[in-house]
Length: 197
Image (tube, rainbow, N blue to C red; front, side):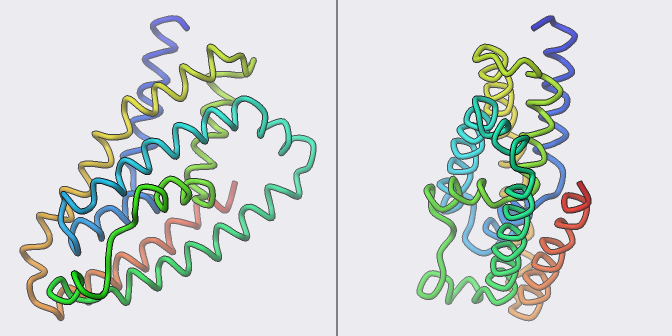
């Protein structure tokens, strides 16, 4: 991969991973409700789960979607249903003083598995493979996955950190409820651009 193409790939991965989407909005809500340290497994799950997804998509799953386009529609429907359920969970999250008892952030495995029903992750992965690994060779697919792994963690850490900063302002249970409902609505709204693809 030439330096200009690598720079373009890194720019693409930065924009794709730092812009609002289901992962980032959930991390911000988790940071606000549970703090940065308790959100770390969620962040690591995103990093590993999404990088693995890129590898598997590039190495064969993309060909499956090319052969059976209906599978892509089924994936979108399942993703929407799951994200609506998650939005409900975010909107109804308990206040921090009760969160230790009643709620908990996503685990590493839950966050890694979530990538497979995250419409933005699919859109980013399919686009990246199409643009930067059109031959779908192992070397080019590994380069795309490595670029996402390199850029992803700092980008998503920013969202979890913003959540912890907002947490101080959310010490009032009424403001926290408003924040959680707003995050849930934004999570639902984040589906619109991805579902148009």
